[in-house]
Image (tube, rainbow, N blue to C red):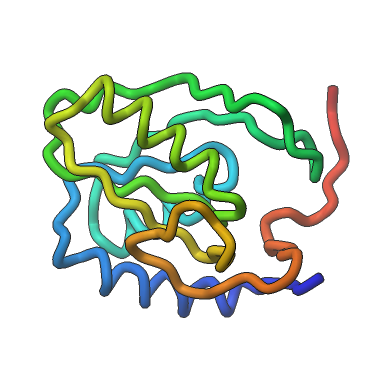
Length: 149
């Protein structure tokens, strides 16, 4: 397991923002929940207010589910270029499904993918990425917190 620190994240956000800037996205679409931190920081770095989220469920804790549920799809009808952000592209299956669902609903929108980490074996390679993951990543935002149910 590898711990990914806030200091590393700041460096990677700046790297990703420089890569993404020429693409000139209209919207940053963060995959909840893993992509929310990256989406927020990229929206600050790129000075963009059009930050939306989309939900997907493909994992429960560390257990991969048999289905991928995509929901809370925002209105992208006025967008031309959207960068979808997530913390890691693991198998790539979730991002492939998100792109399929969005592409069917918004065929005129150009969709690109950004992530902090990606795995070499993933079925989808992000258009923008900072690092390759070769082991389990413990993100600084995944610290153990008390659950209040």
